[in-house]
Image (tube, rainbow, N blue to C red):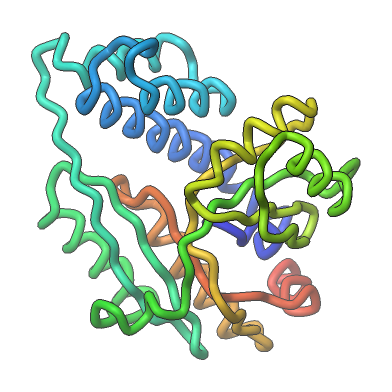
Length: 254
């Protein structure tokens, strides 16, 4: 889930790392298939595909998987790839809110799977617009806090001719936030400055955070997020939640 790496305890991360890697691979593969279907299999003439392939390679997706995804998306294997993007708004425990982004070839299946996962894990599906207003669509570049400073990053971005709004600390990571239209130029400025980053994606960023101050609410929230993220059609989950370190320590002791 975007922005919740600091909430996941070490134990939680270790238990889920293989599943999350497989999930991440599937996300990048879908992105390649969609780009190839829209603009063809030639990366030289399809900027969206070139970007999708670059992101997949940056995240260690095997080349064979990338090549198969390009051929499948472009229709060169005889398969038909037709994905639809859908959003679901969810209310969780203690005022928490989530935006769930799906990319699916079956909207009815996706809607049913999300509804079941949410209702069985302490959440409710919200009416369209009743949660979305709590978030803004932003470009977000995520990178390690170690070895980077806010001033250094903003200077590199400015020197690269790009424009960023702010740099925000998120546990052991830093987030560079910008307008979605500026995301590519910000990433290119970092590349030019030799600054490594973990991801560069459009995300839903909460305008205000809600702190979950008791272990029960935090446990329910994390269970809800995990159940949603496990669904094949779900690409990303965004939330307005912050869990204090003291509560995380309680969860780690469970």
